[in-house]
Amino acid sequence: MRYNLPLIPKGWVIVLRVPGKAHAQVVAGALRAREIPVILDYEGFGATFGLTVDGLGEVRIAVPAENEAQAQAVIREAQQNEIL
Image (cartoon, rainbow, N blue to C red; front, side):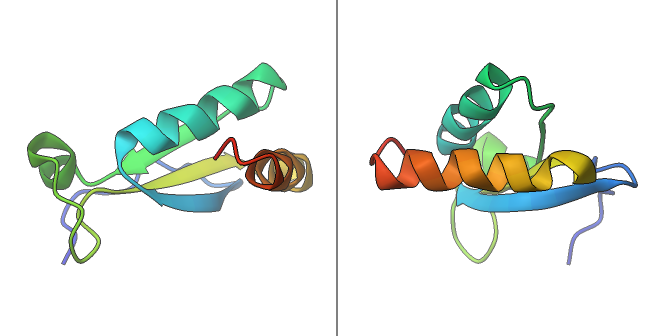
């Protein structure tokens, strides 16, 4: 059960879930390079201890809803080029 509230404001959507902050930072950097605002939402306990089991350590990457299609295109392109 998750006790802390997500940092994702209304009007933002999750475009990707990744295991760990390092991977999330790479994705966030690719999105920010295209001037897409990004929020990383993650469980503090998993991040603190580096756990990636049963949802701990998972990072949710969110963008404003109006940027969702552009963000998905950036993510697809990066995955096809094996950057992510």
